[in-house]
Length: 249
Image (cartoon, rainbow, N blue to C red; front, side, top):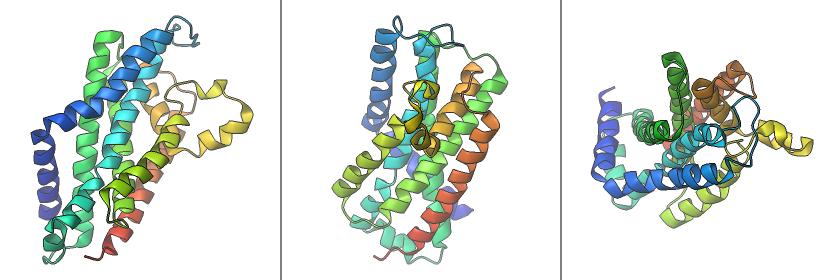
């Protein structure tokens, strides 16, 4: 546990010292929330939410912030490879599993903090959290999204040596995941032929889980959402740990 805590603490210190990273990570979700939300609020009708598109959009933007931050935390692994820190860590008498879990915990924590910032800002533009229980439910799904996609990013980074290549591959992968998650539109309004793609997208269940916690409305049963995103988090952690053990320096 000391190793996991030490790696986590290192990630947190790097995050706190990087003001540009904090600001940059909330810029895009906030842009979508303000300009897309208020721009379409008067023309989009959403049953069950009083026609408020901004409120509908908030869970998607929170999930977006958490996912993007967590996925790109995998770049830390490549950075550590190039500058020799990872080699020094791996030759120490510690488990690679503990190192990977520490990286995952650090990345997931920073991702949840970023999502929480978007959530707090949303309170000033119309979001009303109905209960503390709802907030805790949303927070649980944020944590699961953070763990899932941090482990996913570490798994990919474990097999790569170039930071630019990692960024290109991640952009190619995560934008379809985000676009098909129902973050920007109700999944029930889409044609039937695209529904299978939406239902195999793990982020769909994270977005709907956060939406249920914040608004009390979800198009997928929240227990199903919890089971799927929870299972995905476990699976990605196991895959990430396996690939991290295979790293060669």
